[in-house]
View 1 (tube, rainbow, N blue to C red):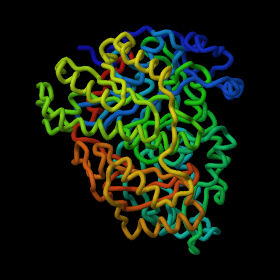
View 2 (view 1 turned 45 degrees about the vertical axis):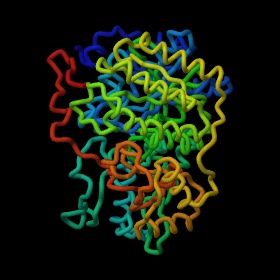
View 3 (view 1 turned 45 degrees about the horizontal axis):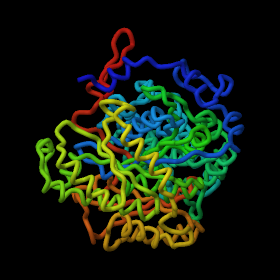
View 4 (view 1 turned 90 degrees about the vertical axis):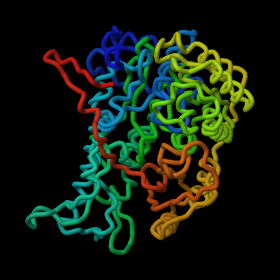
Length: 556
């Protein structure tokens, strides 16, 4: 069986100018990065602002399992299938982080015959956006520490520095460090921390900013520390905004590449400054909507994380209204949720399926709370049986959902025709009445509890003393009207990654809360979630290599 990278390397890509032309994008509208990658110019994006928007389809999934779900593969495969069905379609995706590429995932460009290419470029440095974000983040950190070193005119309390350095790599040794050791000229000694680049607030700002002016305003609002009087100190106070914006100027432009079947793909930005929730930028999504009849986009992890944030943060901030949701599952993953060990998932087991399908049930219910039509799709495996398909099909129909099998991994767009037709049918016959889960005016504590109880299924929420104190301070500073970005394990609906299926009535533990004032949301940390991951015992990096001709192997 061919690997993903072998399939990608055997594909003949079209020049990106040719892909662009199919969407009415001329050569002068592109800023080329070689033959197969380009950024869209600011002038072009401005010129299409008044065009009508197409339909927006969100792809999300059940809670991820070791059995795999294939959300990105489905997003790309569906876009290819819709194109083959005669619909002018674009897929809008996030850029992968280098950390997971060298850690567990080994790549994030889709899979099989539903990938975006050039996949090696995308999984490595791509167009340098993440490097720009890393540098802007660390410039702010350097200016902060230099200000303290040069006399600390703002009276920054070094015990209350919030801003962390970042690196786009899984490196647990950098979670907690001490800086400023050495001579007096080497800086002020203090504890510091690193987060992975995709968890930087700069990433969220880039994803949510509408233009350079909005970007600069958001950068200025970043709270980097508190002074001795307990007042916030911002990036604007440090005169950091102009230089940071200069570093991010080109990174703000969305990137155009293609799928294996030459459907256009706008790939831009990453998660929401927290853990990888897999939403691309507002700019990319809105641009795609102006250029296509149907835009397919994706929200990371399970619907309890990615979709909830897509709805309650991204759609709220950008005025987006999704027309349909595709919810991805597999027979294998549902049986895993039903208690079947990973090495026994290939055997028919209807009893385990009945036990595990409650996870899918909860995600269906969650999406329906937002009043958006749902299409459930199953990524097919050779070991699946017709009896298992029939059980899931009936389960979905009983809950008012369309259902389709998907074979996009093995067959590309041809394998997604059933799914494409269900999506088209849903868009034509079922109206979306999208609404958010909570209003801006709801107190922060109530927003947290609404998400915990309505989306996760918690019975109660408990707060540490630090979290209670932070909630009061954030509210007193005037940020109580912001939406909440929950940081929670992706592996369970609860904050305990070991609770599979549909846990109910549990206590959700909030250990800390902080405000991302530039991004425009409040982050609540639950359980043991990390913003700087570590590498596994056998990292994907072990298998990655490049030969004398420059051909890369080992990226999945």
